[in-house]
Length: 553
Image (tube, rainbow, N blue to C red; front, side, top):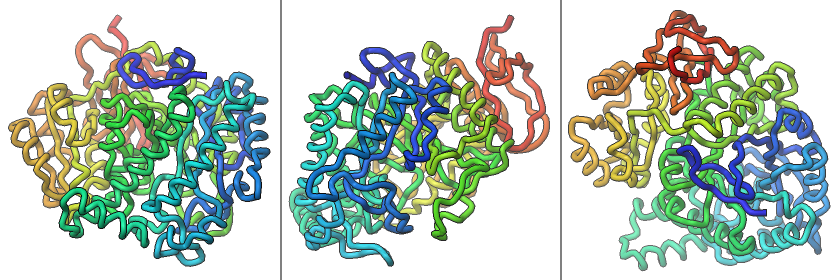
């Protein structure tokens, strides 16, 4: 088996055995309650699956019970659960491609036996978990990862494993277990060394930067190890880089640029933004600056953990009985499925449908819709998937470590940006020079001043719009007027608009008539109804419509 990520039709694409495949996958935590058969019947051939080294909670803040037994809890590794889960997928889809989500958390016994390698802080009801500055922890993690990969390389499933998603830390998303930066004896030692090596004073800004740098050091260490173990035949990826979603520096997600410069990580992942609890009539944005990810040749997988009316709390824990865990009525759920699928399609990236507890999509309305989504995903492989955006948004991840940073500016501004009525791309400021000439308008999000943003704003001159905390209340109208004055094509004001070469998507932020302004020579065809549309039609709040852009007849 050989897999890679290469450019195809304008975007990074997953290749398996030299052939591009649609990035449309299925995943559930509860494999005993999986719907592999249902998704295989939709034409899905790409599957993720959970793997756990230890029998530990995935969330130290909520203390959700462990999802499954860990492979390394006993005196000898027990691969029986993993092997059975693989057989279950292959029974549903004999030609399945599988990329395991490998939770690298060590067994509880190791952490209990090595208190000096753990964090100072533990959440109520929880334990002192591994500190990511610990070299002993990193070496043990690689040892177990090597045993796991060796098992696969020697097994019959080898020709179905197309890569590995290396998961770790809190919620498997490379948040520190203490959610405070992974602070312990080993981090204090490592920070002193870090400051000495870089000639730093060791102030608060240095400390905040260290948190992310250390996290990425470990991610790249494990990724390089996995690459070596697989002779660089398979793609390796991870959750990371929640630049727009998680501004707190102690959450360690602000060294994305370092990962993008590495050849050892092929894909990055995140869920859809949870901003405002994902209401109807608002853009459900990405967490990552995905256009930097794409610019550096990396594939982006979005986790479509789309809540449905069938989403149910897995237990009585209060954290899992709050509104974010429960989906809307079936009609709005279908609109959200269209939105989440269309965002991936028009933004040129992959997705997996995260049936978290199993059974979230057990409704013929959802399965029928997902079947059509899978068909469109396959059809899109031969279409133009390059972005139509004429607006570029830039942010400097270094701003989050600065004193006085108003990090939630980046979190909140996405709602306003989503209502401009035109698509936009989003980058790290490090990619300004490489990307700037593609766009008519350049928007800079500045939680705190940095030299890189200052210089880019000066270079962009009249095409630059700087949004600081003082302008946090800027309106979509003001941004739209600024962009239109610089030649940006506005498709439909006060509407969420996504667009690439072959497709246009609209999500209604209000009830009533919507008028779409199209570039010359193009017409719309609804990809779900098949209807050819004019430029004006009624939409209800929360309605989602995906169109093929076709030549006028």
